[in-house]
Amino acid sequence: MCLQQCLFKISLQLNRHSYTFAESEIARWQVRQLFSSLGLPMCENIIAALFERRNKSKNENDDKDHARWETVHKAVQSSFAEHSSSNNFSSSSLDDSGSDRHTNSDTNIGLKKFFGSLQREKVKSTTVESASVFSSVVRVDSLNICHGEDTKSMDVANSAEALVSFSVTLKECKNDPLVFICSRPEYRDAWVDAFVPVVIPQLRKSNDPDVVEMKKKLGWEYLVIRSSFITHIIANNVELLECCLQEIFLQDRTVMINSSDEYNGYSPLHYATILGHTECMDVLLENGANFTIEDRDGKSAMYHALRGRNDKVADVLEKHGADRNDDLRRVIIDEIQEQEDEASKSAANNDDQLSDDGVDMSCSDRSRDSVTEALMDAARRFG
Image (tube, rainbow, N blue to C red; front, side, top):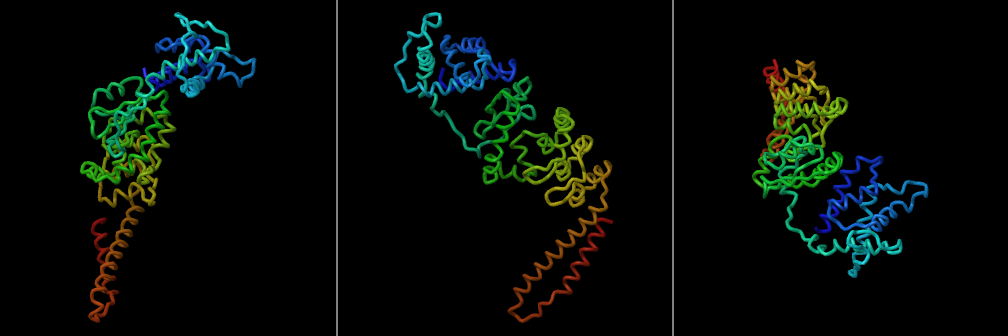
């Protein structure tokens, strides 16, 4: 067993035991049981040394039969660092049964014996078998939110460990994702969040044909980092959207539904509206989505519905109490302004081309005509 594997197993086992003790403490007998279950050498002087590190700063009246498991783990790591340079480990500190045959002055001999058994494969543990760049990441799944079709991630997603698990799928092995299981949901969330600032920027710069095609879809970031119910809105999966929302506490659900994201400044309802996913809109609105919330440009969901000429989407918003009149006027004004700007730009280009011929460059008549035409066009389209 190599060093990293050993320390990881110790950490994992301690994490699993930590919930049974007040303030995540672990008892001496639990440490003995832990080392025994891992098949690691153990004797009382090693335990004493670990707990002495924990308790040296405590009052004498404090309970010395318990220690925080985080501190015990750190003691294991720091002790290895202290003694790993020594290759002269003595086996005389342990008898065949693993019992203590020395006084407290020989405590470190027992530690050296323990850490020496790990050092034999130290070189192997630092070998990197494979590596991938962040632009090779196809998707990162919080397995209680979403998962691929492979058996490995499906099995974890359907187990009790789904809340603490995530997977990373790489382009070179799409059917065999890397699955990680953390000790707590908040640790899992922190890991997944850490992928956002490194994976998303890399994919934005990518010229890979598949990535370029994916980036044409609004909200593609949620198809890469699948840790939010918004993923199901982008994918238009109403059933999974409902399941996700029902698992979120009501107060948290209301906050999350009405929050704007970091990518486009859109709320979940903005995404559903712009994409025309009317069933998802109904689910969001029935779960407390506020249709008056504006995006970072100050535009509501109704504005996007009208600007996209999507009457069905506007009808869904209206059914839930939205009024299209204010947004309708704003859409008309914005489109007239855009046409004016386009006409002015076009006229300026014509001026540059004709100025050398001495032609009169006044365009006031053309500007008035463009405004009139825009107004008439808006009247026809919006009735």
